[in-house]
Amino acid sequence: MSEDKIDKTTDVLTDESANNQKKDDSSEYEKVCFMCRRPESKAGRMIGLPGGINICTDCMQKSFDTMNNGNMDYSSLMNNLPPNVSMIDLSSLQNQIPQNQRVKKAKPKEEKKQEKTFSLDDIPAPHILKEMLDQYVIGQEKAKKVMSVAVYNHYKRVFAQKEDDVEIEKSNMLMIGPTGSGKTYLVQTLAKLLDVPLALTDATSLTEAGYIGDDIESVVSKLLAAADNDVERAQHGIIFIDEIDKIAKKKNTNQRDVSGEAVQQGMLKLLEGSDIEVPVGANSKNAMVPLTTVNTRNILFICGGAFPDLTEIIKERLNKKSAMGFQSDLKDKYDKEPNLLSKVTTEDLRTFGMVPEFLGRLPVLFTLESLTEEMMVEILKEPKNAILKQYKKLLAMDEVKLEFNEGALHAIAKLALEKKTGARALRAIIEDFMLDIMYEIPKDDNIGEVVITQEYIEHKGGPQIFLRGQEIPQLGVLS
Image (cartoon, rainbow, N blue to C red; front, side, top):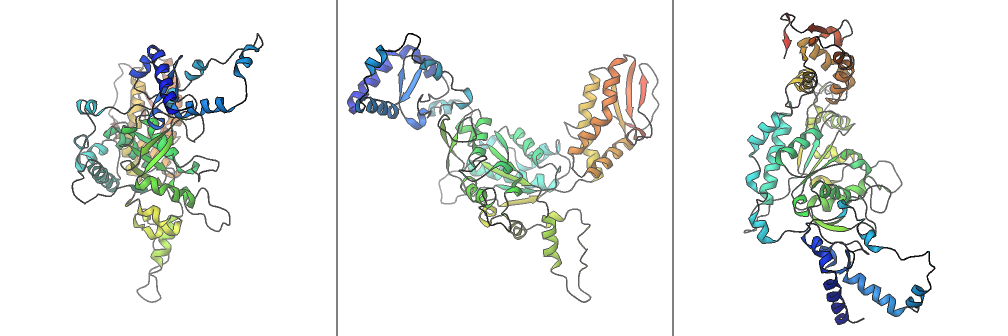
């Protein structure tokens, strides 16, 4: 069929279904082709059919070519259908496109100027951003300082004028820290303070394209979903890839490294910035999922991992300085150093199995400290969303006051350090000790206050319970 005929058919079909399409035209989401599932930004002009069905011109042309070149008599087929067989209601199938697979329309320039857009004025200065992080995250002073500066410089780069030849490079970050030291919590807090879309993903499920697992583009697809399928908003977001150490180059293997070095190589274009075709509302590309294009040039990538055995690589490098004689270092000099990870270099990471090109696209490298007993105690009571404050609020809803004395807090911190899982052990320990109290208190309306003591935590006694109106002695209790 000629192009003129297709254009005439398009106009006729669009006129016939004008009333049915009014709602779609006013919608903030793009139309999706019923046959190829491409949005109108990718497929171009859509042909509107009765029943709210949209078909792109390419698919319509293929349909006409198939009917013209085929030898089947469609009219006789329709007339000879059995009485109990009917044609499929295509409109019902069109309406089954999930909302999470519909891409938001790009707003016109005039509308963008009228509404308040995300700008550099919305990003706090580094010292203000660090003060905001201090309210939620205890310790990790260097990490908070590095992140505040890197984020501020990243968004300055995003909104920088392109007038001169100076182009600022991306400040993607690589954070290294023991488990439970607050890597994910730092990024979550940062995104919440900045009010930008955040995608949290895990590198363990990523594989090279064509193999079982998530494609590398799926990390961008998750960010698009976090931005409510708004491409423009997603392009100013943050992607945090946890467990990045799991894609290190595998050693002593003769098989194809589809989840190690291959993933690092595939992520290079994402980290540097390029146009990526990502599935909408799914983690992998298939014929029934629409695709859209996202530019990763202005997306901030933060990678984090615990990097087990990296301390052994650092020790080996530092111990190479040992020599025989009076100036030699002891081989066990660094065995008991708590923050040995702070001495890490890119050479150590290359020895661990990270590709040099991958490390080159993560220029901001910093480490998190191991948590001490004092830091654990502060984590329990100081942050805005502290665990103790949460339990106090729960009991306050039963009109019961909850207190912890100093000895109890240190006893909880010691137990958490023994578990060697960082701050996430605190919640599990308190849940265990608070179970009986949370179960028994609603039974008795006369209870007015509960004090958690060190003896209760160490299984040497029970909590102190005071009835309403009873005079409470001064026991050095923390409120």
